[in-house]
Image (tube, rainbow, N blue to C red; front, side):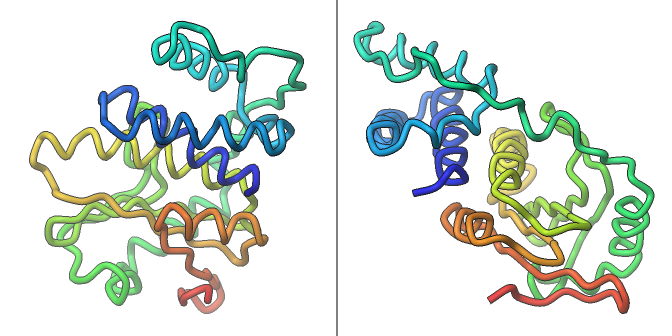
Length: 209
């Protein structure tokens, strides 16, 4: 297990808690096991994440389990300082939506596509609707690290909440990056995301495996 997988399970736990889904206890037990294996994995979570974990812990078992207390040296949230307005990134996203057919081998025929799609967790780089499926597209101009896992999971949670509105039936994740480190690739596969390789000159995408 890695830090990226801890992040992925955390966001699944958080989503299950907000929606009161039956998988809540399973994800909680998975995090307990991971902490027992290596507490350092949890340093990837932000202070806000740990506050939510404490609340979830209290609600599940009346504060009898002290997993998320102690002296963890917490890292800052890796997403708060993202430079989403970087010129190269913006130009790349614009180029992709102008050539939307580049996505269709992976999404099917596109009915709508937009850039900087708003969510409660920040804007999604590219948002696609195809048939009854919504696609979250995360674009990186540099190699993907484990931080991408928590980022796309937050977007997945935000978009999945709208399935109740019958706007679409399913939400999927696609990432476009020049390359992936091992933790990023394995973590994305573990959450059933589709990691693709992005080349910007000429503009094209292909499977990472």
